[in-house]
Length: 336
Image 1 (cartoon, one colour):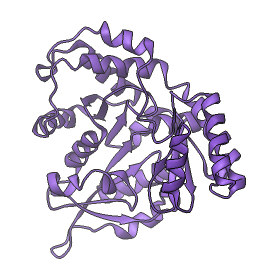
Image 2 (tube, rainbow, N blue to C red; image 1 turned 180 degrees about the vertical axis):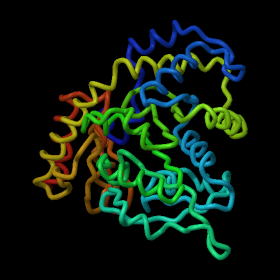
Image 3 (cartoon, rainbow, N blue to C red; image 1 turned 120 degrees about the horizontal axis):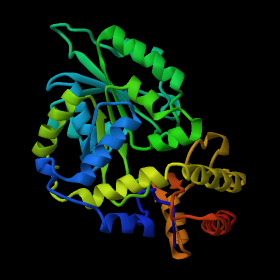
């Protein structure tokens, strides 16, 4: 089976399993898990920040970050297709009392000039804007990498208005692999950064919220409130540490395979290889659900996102042979 639905479907490698089984663990709620503490320190240092907080999910890391920057009844600005707006079950409003407004960027790409007119200053008649969220890479945008020059402009804008900046960096590893932008540069630009270990890096579970020391202390309170306090979490943290050490550099392989996949399918008119920047290939296929079902019968799984569109993601568990099999199966189905 070649599973291209998401880069979350990976299974731990033998080396990762060995690291997990040999982890030195304790009670993380007491702050006594050595493996968790080591992972948090490593991630914070990687992004040039003071502290990090290990969470079970990316959605939790995002929501903690948003609550640190925006109080109940205040406003967050984000892209119209942002994960924090569309795929976290309304948590910003339901759990944080946060109002959101959105802008629409091409393929999720941010433009500071487009964001500035949306900012509400303190006023007795409007909801005051407190923070801006950026997704990098942008999932539904098709793995779009946010240009660092534009992020710097956004940082200047946020500073001018006294706004916080949150980075939904679930796939920031892919942005780094595609551009070479140092992680510390992203850390410098954002107040809070969420990163996911279970997507491109292949860990079975886990994300981190990376920020300054004072916010990290508050983040632990919010994490406990949300039910995210784990005990011997070091078995999971050890997988994350292994992933950071071994699986970042190899992301270039996923990007190359995504390019090959897109170029091979482009003649069928379902995708644009020029739009594939990282490991995500968006496709437009009439009656895609039927095509996806037929492909699954032949050992290829793709993600259906709407009546005529979907996506395919390359990852740790898909090799060159898997890509060739996917091209053969989909080419046959689309050529009918």
